[in-house]
Amino acid sequence: MANVPQHPHPRKGDRRDGSVYSPTPEIITAVQVALITGRPLLLAGPPGCGKSSLAGFVARTLDFAYLEFVVTDESSPQDLLWNVDVIARLRDAQLATAGEQVPPLHDYIDPGPLWWALNPASAARRGADEDVELSRPCSMPVHLKDYEPQGAGAVLLIDEIDKAESSFCNGLLVPLGSRQFHVTDIDETVENGADRAPESPLVVITTNGERDLPDAFVRRCVVLPVEGPDAERLEEIARLHFPDVSEDSAMSARVRELANRFTKSAKDHASTAEFLDLVSVMIAFGDDSDSDQWQLVERLVVEKPNVRRNLFTSW
Image 1 (cartoon, rainbow, N blue to C red):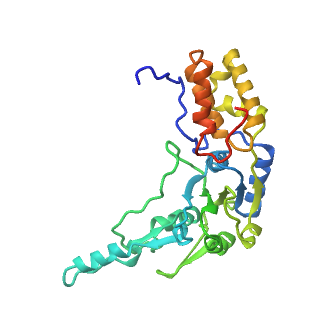
Image 2: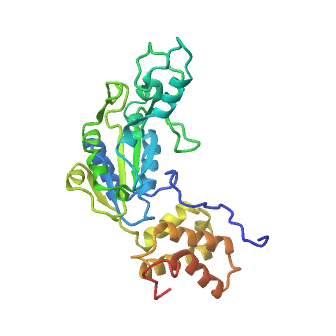
Image 3: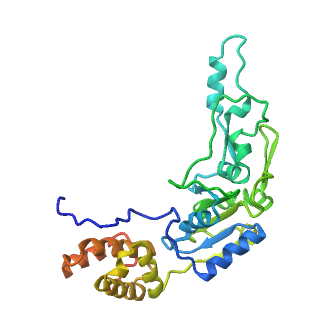
């Protein structure tokens, strides 16, 4: 593997940190509407079109904290709110010597991402008053490296909500709609803190359309379909991710040609992320790749034969 070409500015996997993003006018308006109305922003579109990255970009733009929750088929609405570490509490109770007090229940409360988004001060205290002595530290999870927000707000990404059953969406109707929920285990209501920005938190939800979402849930959201970009926008996205392209006329022409082919033949199947993978390999190979090698690259990155059900006929 010693002869593997090296990219001058490698792009490793998907960029979910929001540091590189080119919002369309429709996206900007949708975010503004969601902030004004306090409704979740539901982004619907194919995988790899940049839905998830928008949340990180908005957080950076607003200087808000960023939190995320990736939905699976085993996810519960409770995971976004809070959970109780009953195993740790039982262990501590069994290990406690005679006359020794078991720590308060608050010590075993694990705040979920929506709690952190609404009221980080309360989450850090696990819902306990200031006079309650806690033995377990609690801090907000960090999902964006090298980013320290200063604004009094948060952006929460709930990613791929269509992976869960409809009961997951139904369980979030009240917490997302009212921006508050009751922690029954400690009889505490979590709501936006007095020091929070009025437009916070902004909840961004993504769906790949693999499963229909309940109408009651959709009605409570600002909904924006995110379509695949055209050739001109693909070029713009490539230049954002790989600034060197603009300085190399030959490479710029190759990217333009690739964008035109990509949107013409692979538009309904491949993603923006796969296009960026192709550009990354193109830059790394430079002029060293022959036509046979590049055809193999396209099969590896885009066609993915025997895995994709609809193989490309024009690539």
